[in-house]
Length: 356
Image: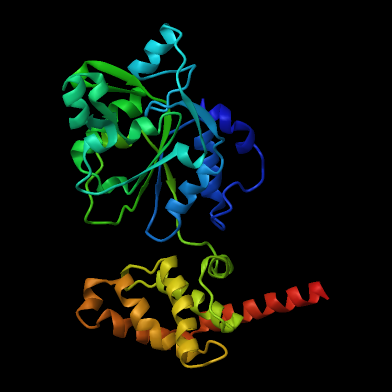
């Protein structure tokens, strides 16, 4: 059903996921998975836009009319007992329109998340009124709210093993068995999750669960130019000038750190945004009309060290803050930066010639 709704949009060649710059391979695979209503996990390090990309999907979903029952039943496909009974008895049931955003249901993975949060639980007030084993006392969870839509599970590998097991049946068969009521609920949704595979504080995902997903691998912005554009579009701005050469400088430096063999954990796009925004505020506080290299170096200790992780052999000799200071000093004089800067200047010159 969802694939049919999205098919016309997915088959166009235009970029549907404009909230994310670059990442063309991921976007192509995302279209392919959605076209077949496949469940999938977007895998990648933090701060690269996995959640933003998933949210962008909500913009593709059209508004639909559902029954006002808590299960997002449609009149053609009721799944809850009250809607099924109304259909058999041809009773009219109250409906409502839900937008694409409302069809996109988000769950945040955490160790204290329970199966009841996803599936639903007994409402004590309703249990007193209808009886503890009455279906009327059951309050549907987020899986049912995602019926006829998308269930987005952010950081799936932070969910406990018990909750992972609760997902197996619905992902394989498209139905949920609520044991207390000896009933099966058939649900129709696409399950999209995100995962940071290098997070050591997470649960291991069982092979039997992973077998129910396709994987989409997402990395850092492919080029310096793309990440500069991200800063210009997403970064906060203050009334100071940020010279383009310095903008290139901070992005090129972050790209250099991502290739640094002494780091186990490298800085994300949030780190680049932090340098971009904090250097502006630093310049403004000093009454500068434009950002200088000194403004950047003064705030780097506040923005970068906690976002990186040194390899054990380096950690014995240096603190992260000192490592960052040493690296930015070396970077200013590096051959790679000079070549990158020269290429940027040539690009700018070409752009100016083309516009005259």
